[in-house]
Amino acid sequence: MREELCRFCMRSQAKSLSGQAGSFFLPRIVNADLQRRVATEEVVVPEREYLFTSESVTEGHPDKMCDQISDAVLDAIIAREAELTVEGFVSSAGTKASPDYVRCAIECFTTTGQIVVGGEIRTHGYVDIPTIVRGVVKEIGYNRAKFGFDGETCGVLIGVHEQSPDIAQGVDESFEVQHGAGVDPIDLIGAGDQGMMFGYAVNETSTLMPMPIYLAHRLAERLTAVRKAGVLDYLRPDGKTQVTVKYIADKPVSVEKILISTQHADGVDIETLLRPDLIEHVIKPVFDEEGLDYSAAEIYVNPTGRFVIGGPMGDTGLTGRKIIVDTYGGMGRHGGGAFSGKDCTKVDRSAAYAARWVAKTVVAAGLADRCEIQLAYAIGVSHPLSVMVETFGTEKVDVERIEEAVLATFDLRPGAIIRDLDLRRPMYRKTAAYGHFGRADKDFTWERTDRADALAKAAGLS
Image 1: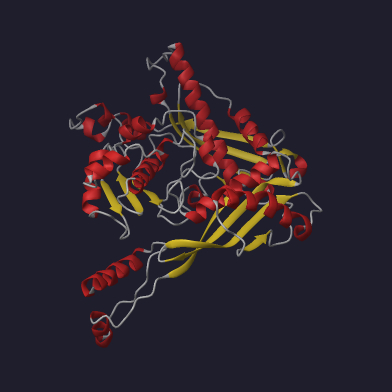
Image 2: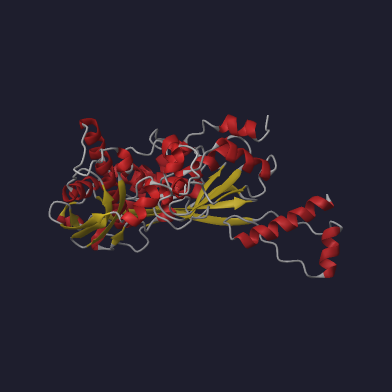
């Protein structure tokens, strides 16, 4: 018991230094008497209790408008290149059309009455970006000036150019191939950028996502659904949700606070109309479906008292500014790279998807209750520079064995990730709102756990 307690103390100190949400905190033991009391089991370390909060936003939030526009452009480029491939198109330079040829890094900015799209593209085809932009905005619901933005009449400015050949040469032909070290066709593709990416999974929800962000996303989805279905026809597209969950010993035990802020028509009374409607049509259905009790939770609805001016008229929007909403709500770490508008050679996106795939498989395989994966890449290099597995003390076998099993079960070169997750498809716009992870959609291939048995076997877990 004494040995176990000492190991717990050291682990807790290490976790407190890691800065991880939900980690224990135990000050460094410097007092000799305290050391003696810990060694003789006179000190009982209480289970840590804390609150953790995550937010989501609706598709009408200005930042999410930009994410969706960026990914809609990407989807259109991939789809058009696929059409040209079927037609057998060959350019004047002799290059054949192929989805493999596509490179895309599209950013979007929006403010009152204006949308700016810029970035770098490589493709054989032409896509009508202004028409794509207006279509996305109108589908979101900004189709009348009284809503603060109108996709039919807003200004659209395009500033797109070709991808830098300096970048392309390392992606088209990796460092390994250029130096004679390539061993198979997968080695041909180099990472589209340097950086580190994280994936996370935890045994808290059916999708192995942290409970706060999972619930926040479901509330945001439901908020949009009742607006689009006309159930609450006074709602407008912009909105945000937030959920606070109480944890004891790193396990969720109750929902403590629920916050919804939503754009609405002028003249709507918050207390007599909006609040009861949101409880009845948004909060209750979501929590009933998840089988969770919210009766003791504090509920906040539009705390400012008014949210008529919204969307780009209320705040500017920018692609990639909701990276925590896109991932794990702050529960897992983030490497800093955004996703939307980037094709699958950009490891900011594809390797983050792969890291989630691996982390979720580790938990699904029963190797740990909580797992975080870090991957790191160099631009133009095929093989990852590092792979790290962190299980926060929840592992069922040695972490070293889990790490070895991961490397034996998953090929984490960019080309292999693209192949195994089938990422050269026009399916990215749907990822751009309500989270890239924890979604029950067959197109989200990184949510599969079909390698769980193979991983468990490789780790020696029978």
